[in-house]
Image 1 (cartoon, rainbow, N blue to C red):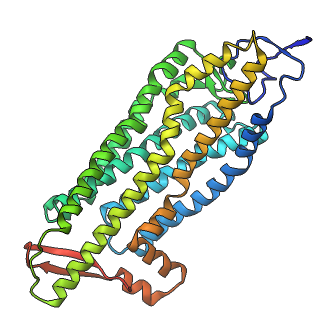
Image 2 (image 1 turned 135 degrees about the vertical axis):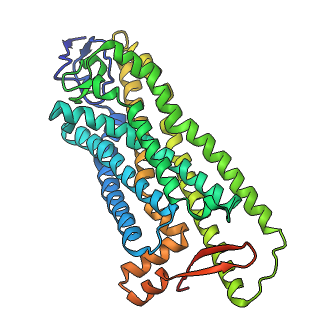
Image 3 (image 1 turned 90 degrees about the vertical axis):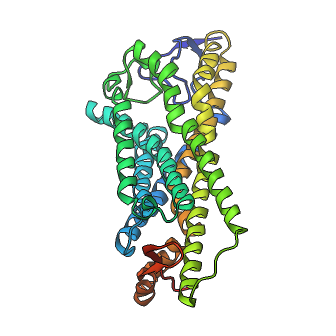
Amino acid sequence: METSKLNVTEDLPTWFLWDWPRCEIPDGGRDPGPLGWAAYYIWAVVPPLLVMCGTVGNVFTVLLIALTFRRIRSVDAMLITLAVSDTAVLWSIAFRNWLIHLWGIDIRGVHDIICKFSIFICYCSFQYSCLALVILTGERVMGILRPYSVYAQDNRKRVLIVASGTFVFLMAMNSHLLFGFSTSPDPRYTPPLSKCGIEDYTYFVFLEKYYHWVHFIVGYSLPCLLIVLGNMLIIRSLWKNRFENKPSTSNALSRQLSKRRDHQKRSTTIMLVSLNVMFFVTQTPAAIILAIGHYLIEEANSFACSDFAAYKYKAETFNLVQSLVHIFVYFNSALNFLLYVQSGTRFRTHAHALLTCNRKSLERVTSVTYTDNLHSGTEGACVVESSN
């Protein structure tokens, strides 16, 4: 069989895996097969749609909360930070991958600073989006278990301090990325067409075999554990309160306010649980690939010199699975706005009033009534008046 020497630095096809052992390949071996073309069309079609939808939805979320919510709660503030981090994920990962696979352009290769900070922002924003759900879950747990405590009444500043501290911690943890990547990478440790990668073998070993497990823990396993525990406490408390005998209120207004407050609590809880379910469904495949991807690539590369057909099948299968896994991750960052509208009554009412330009409805939605809760002795309890 006639073979041709592959120029690793220039001619490596996009479906090849990094750490290519520099073997000779058969003529026509660079052309993608059916699985390679399937991955190509997935990258060509889906990411730009998700980037556009996610950006519009996240920007609308920020504007809706900032412009129409007269009283921004801690949950609302966290939704703003989550929208910002999700948008950063879409543009730093999804948009870049679309440019690479469709046009062969890597925006990280424009300058060394762009290369380093793009990788840095990518890791920080992804990890923060996961930990933001943990903070939201913790806030909801405190709001349900201790609804009339000082913490539950005035926790917006505390939540923002925790969120800011979390992001500072992630920045410090990922700071090594600013020194490990450059625009002059070693092609053995860099995906095809990528102009930004690792240039040192020691750092490559550290990143692939050690730090990816840290990323796995911080970006998936730890958030999963804390979210599951938080949701168990939330569901247990709501189920318990459902069968408790609530004391009768002194007047009709107090009963109405209590009913609205309970409805708002359930609505916020449903929205949070929906976000958590979306997180589990979309992030679990990515976490699995992150954990075992290095070993799958090593196995595929072991066939590169002895059985190129087997290598090509394994490489294209891995790339197809990886493309689907990435799309799932992008869904999590792009479709959160739809979850807010679908499961959050307060958010949905504000969105409808804003989109229909119904000023009177918007004024009714954003009106806030301050009242004393006679049974808890808590002053200043806020109830959002709904037009429903």
